[in-house]
Amino acid sequence: MRVDLILLCLAYVLSQFFRAFLAVLTKVLNTDIGTTPEDLAFASGLWFLVFAAMQIPVGAALDRFGPRRTSALLLLIGGSGGAALFAVATTPVHVWAAMTLIGVGCSPVLMASYYIFARSYPAAQFATLAALMLGIGSVGNLVAAFPMAWAAETIGWRASLWALSAISGLIAFGLWAKVQDPERVAHTEKGSALDLLKIRALWFLIPLMFVCYMPAAGIRGLWIGPYLSDVFAFDTSGIGTASLVMGVAMIFGTFAYGPADRILGTRKWVILLGNLIGALALLALALRVDTNGWQSIALMSAVGFFGASFPVVIAHSRSFFPPHLTGRGVTLMNLFGIGGVGVMQFGSGRLHGAIAPSDPVLAYQTLFAVFGALLVAGLAIYLFSEDRTD
Image 1 (cartoon, rainbow, N blue to C red):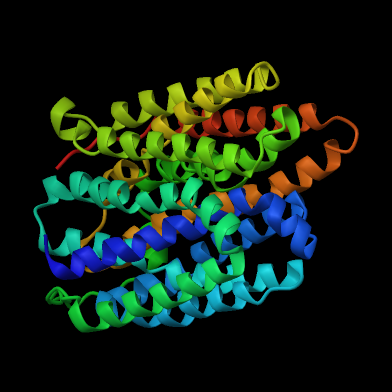
Image 2 (image 1 turned 90 degrees about the vertical axis):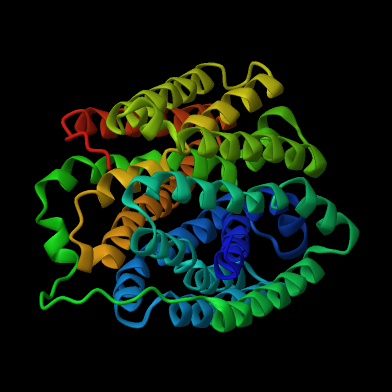
């Protein structure tokens, strides 16, 4: 594997970590600076929405300047700077600002990799390579679980964030030194994200892209912690272990989805069936929300496994992009995928805050049911999409 792709993979490990580590800090942040689950939902939502909003300028930057400068500069300013700001946070507002900066820093990392895959490798390999990058990078999901809980209890969450700031800076300098920009496409055509939105085939993919990552990212990135704490009285270590189990399931799911389109000769039905099973797991979780903690962890892990279709949905959409809009295309779909999570994190925080004071169990039951219903709605539209493989 090329050195630049290894560095981008390490940077994506950080991206996965930063979107998921708040779940295991639920209790310690509440004790130290007074954050509530609603505060953390807002912070998580900021990360995802800023990350999503950055996809438009990131896509233009990838097509114009290439992945080297785009990924290195944003990770240095946003990732390293945001982690440093988090390390000195004393109020929830500081956490919000830090997560906003970190969202900017993480925004180009995965798309820089996808841009290189789309421009430098055969089209038929895109889904497998994209899933491989996502799967390996999801190690960050695991580090954000039990290891982060251990670090927070051992050296403190502030020292842990300072270390993450330093690591982010080192990786950013490595990206600047080692990433190889693909040759530019020679063309006379101009285009933008608006041209991509005129492609009718994408209209049936975008709604599913908006909701497919929402349940797994929302639960693993935040709600698994408050849910297990409030309903089953799990401590920080128990939440870390549960988050680790769900994170492993998400990694295995990514690797399972990656080659499935080539093995089965279809993308549409791989995506459709997998997400349908994920929706059923969500509805089962809603129905049995307070039955047994480890049963709930198993169902959340199923949501993570079958909700790992993200790279295959992007691969499906990529087959409709014109070559000179590859960067804008993959980042546009990433905008919808990550933006959906951000919107739902804001909405889920308000939903939980409205119901939890009177009935905490009903709050989580409603939350999981809404996740499932949105996924079913996205699948209903996707059913009319055109199947296409490379």
